[in-house]
Length: 253
Length: 72
Image 1: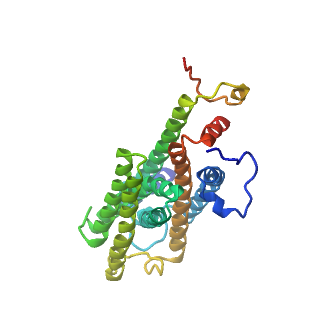
Image 2 (image 1 turned 90 degrees about the vertical axis):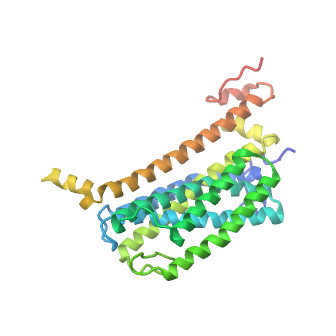
């Protein structure tokens, strides 16, 4: 099945055409560097504002929150996006949807791991505990298991449509169940465990809040960049028998 | 005086190991992700390069970094 894309520029209004893996491969390749640039920009701005001795409530181990909170947000958000693509795959059977689902998973698992690890590093000096089996931390651990399950599925069995169905189902279940639990903790969190949510950050001063938001944006841009890069590789893997793949590889290298 | 300030910067009032630990693990995770990404891409490109059945044409001259595979 050859694709007559050739070397012409993509017309700006052809959004629906992005559904084709070949076109998305091109667009993702063009777009990824911008996301990298944004990530670096936001990250640097965030670090500049926060400094390393930033004035934030929460004790002098507070700089950890600066990494921990964006990581936790991304771990939730990425699973939600994966669930979205999972739903698209289950409903519309678009190949690109399942590829995006798979592409997001490693980034998600790394953020979840980071959230758990930095959470422990924050918990130890602040409250004296590495771990606690409360709903929030347990939910994050469950999240890690979900991500690992999706990745493990694809390590074990590659191109099966049924594997992707299972992965999509896992992502959907996770996206529905875990944030519910997580938000439940938000309402029951007191002064001892400040929870920075979308609606407000009661314990942080405005500069620290700006730094946290910028850092979250930086992580978001970074996730875009890595998953776009990864989905390009996955497209090559899954579409390897297509004519356009051979041509692209020969031209790029 | 300057050395004292640096030491205090690293110690961060006793929380140094935790904060720097968090910073380092973040760095490590990012590096791991990027390395794995590159390895995966290199893998598939090598696989595609090895299985290409197309005859070698002059276009190959443009692909400087492509690994040479001798199919015989």
